[in-house]
Length: 255
Image (tube, rainbow, N blue to C red):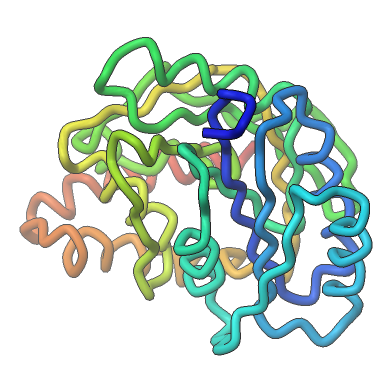
C-alpha cells in the first residue's frame, strides 16, 4: 500500500542496449492515469547510452529506479527476477524496454482483481507495431478469461499486458529457460487461480527482427520443453496440446 491508501504497482522493465526505445517505454508508464506505481528498470549489461537515459528520467520522477544486474547473462529471466525480488508493490507488471503501454492500462486492469478471490492475473489485448513504432491495427485479441488447463493449449497472456496480485499468490519468479514468460504464467495459475482479460487494447508490442523470439523454429523446441520438462506432461498429452498451440501460433503470426 502507498501512503495514500492506494495499491502500489511494481513495473519491472528489463533493459539491454535499448537507447533507441527505452525513453518511449518509460514515458508510457509515466503517462498512466493510475499514479501509484514504481518503475524498476533493470539493466542487463548495456554498453550504449541506455542507463544514462534512464537516469535522466529518474531525476524527473522519483518513482523510477535504475537497477543494475551485476551478473548479466543475456537472458530476460535474470533482470526480471532481479526486479521482482526488489518490488514493493501489491501488484507486479512487466514491460520490456522496447514496448509501450497505453494510458489507461493500469486503471482499467486493477478493478478486475476485486471481482472475486480467484482472479490472480489480469491481461489484455495488444497491438503489434513495427520497429519504428507505426501502428496499423494489427491487434492480438484475447479470451475473456483463462485457467491453467486452458493455458496449456497455448499462451494467451502477452507478457507486456500481464499483471499479477502478490497479495493472493505471493511472488513468482521466471525460470532459466526459453519461453520463460509462458512457463511463468502457467506457474501462477497452476494452484487454481484464473486470469481475466479486459479484452481492450492496452499495450503496443514492437516487432523487431533481432528480438529473442524471432526464430520460429527455435520456438517449436521451446514450447515442447515447457510441456515435457517444466510441466511434466506425458508425451501423448504434450502432442495433443501442441497441435492447438501450433494453430494458435500460426494465427497470431499472421496478424
